[in-house]
Image (cartoon, rainbow, N blue to C red; front, side, top):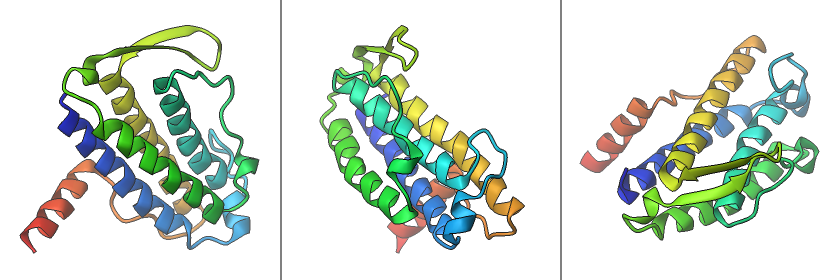
Length: 170
């Protein structure tokens, strides 16, 4: 996978994130934090988990292996999470922009939250970050529907490519 492929994946990731967070922004604080009995009990905990997992992988790329994820209570509302995530996005984009073609296959050693060791090439880890987020965005979509709230605009990767192509023609 090329560095340009990784940048495209990251573009997609943040485009989909923004669509999701825009839908979540329409919720009340009570709806945002409501226990819906999912793998993460609330939309708040699920979107925080997406961000926290991304943060953990970035930390691993920087040579630090967190032993716990960032807790949901560190982000009491969507605005706080959105602000932290926007700041983090700058770091992620900078990291990927600096990757040379050989860097994408570089193996990084790390420790999992469990303490077990791992080692993966950069491209696989970034691909995982995007795929992991997609999985949980689907859960949030279900949670929004369970509450009768409007789900996000389509977040499929093909929708991203269509939107980008349409914008390029304009």
